[in-house]
Amino acid sequence: MAMNFSTSFGIFATFAIVFAIFVPAVYGQHDWAPAPAPTSDVGTTIDQGIACGLMLLALVLTYLIHTFNAPLDF
Image 1 (cartoon, rainbow, N blue to C red):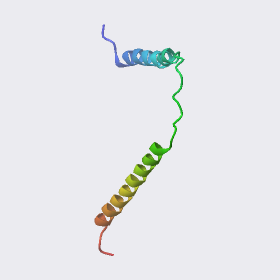
Image 2 (spheres, rainbow, N blue to C red):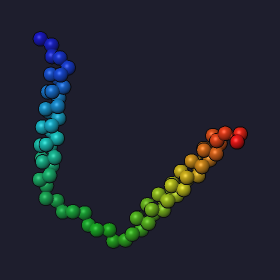
Image 3 (cartoon, rainbow, N blue to C red):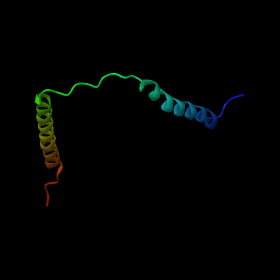
Image 4 (tube, rainbow, N blue to C red):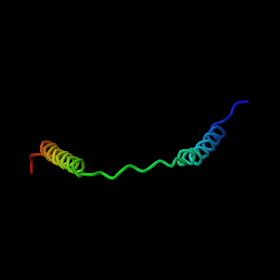
């Protein structure tokens, strides 16, 4: 006897809910020490500099793309 779509979806949904509930509980039982706090802000400064540069690049590209796509007849 073949299973229809709703039956197979129900079985899949049941397994998905069971795994979503119990799998994180299995991994949450480790008592490892947390990572140590960073000793300097050099990495954060570099990350913020790269992010600022990428945002500036995106702003320039957006301006150029919209400038070239704008109609020239007013």
